[in-house]
Image 1: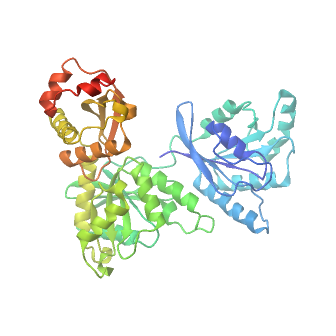
Image 2: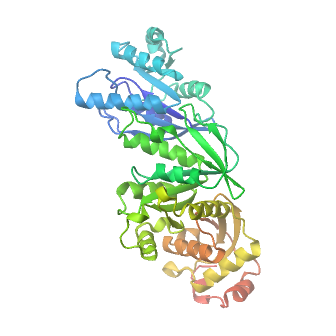
Image 3: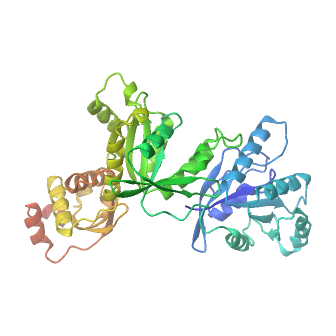
Length: 461
């Protein structure tokens, strides 16, 4: 799980400019007016081969009675709770202020490691302005100019020196790591209780993050599973309640740790925007996914096939996820859910025999040849498996850039159907290649077709 670095400080000290400088792109709105950064910005950053989440926060004005400033203060408090390191930004031009001192006290109370960035040190002439910031008690100040990039490398070196290797997570226990994800009130807690209360032996409970999370390790049919629990997703805190940004960040970090994600839906309600957001995050995560349709006992029309069809139309990007219908209080559907979790994990790690893969590929392509845009034939020569977690394949072709997205989806669907891969995404990558020497003969044997001479003359393979 990647560690989190939060940039905090009073308004208009250049936090968003520093955020953009570290990311090497303009990801945050930069404006000289205080209070412009209200919505959270975060992204993955990398320096010297190490990756971490970087969070840009609004300007902190502690104890303010202004409604917007008070809201920002709560969000900064949440940043302090959620982060693994605090990057405290101050302004060399304006000098040390009372608000800087209040921010420093907040950091010291948190006990989190911190790096003090003295911004707007645009030249060596400005460096004497740095020394007064030693008074904050946050260690040696690092002079930097976010606008020009001066000394930004030194600042990042200082960050890496204090940044934990991982984001405070425990040593990963052996077993299938499973995360239950869903919007509030879909029954996640009841599902957890039903899963851990079923006919299994609880092996142990292992300490989780420094935030007091506990991962539950148990056996099910001789398979060891680790139910990931992050305290951040459950904790009731004035600073973190209803802050969608931090909920999303914690969810992403939970997905990073998981191997199988269970998307929990409320079967008695329609899909919400948050359901679709979570589904999109899972689709992009490369994790195995199982969909649990909970509270099925509250559905008047008990037609599972009809519901599955509707669900796949609404969330086509997760069509590979096998829906399981559950009623958590009665533990109905729990054995089926656990069975699908284990099955999805195996599919996620699946290696396909080369002969079987080639046969599935050739059958899929022969059934529907790629289109020939502008008379240029797109030829798919061969396929090989390039990885697992999830299964990844490399296809050699003469025109990778001309292959339309619709055909790429068709090929994935054909491979999934013929290889029997459910519950796991499939990734297919295309690489430009010259035709093999025996290609014309193999194409005739594999696809039962002679060369398309017109297309070949037009510039195809």
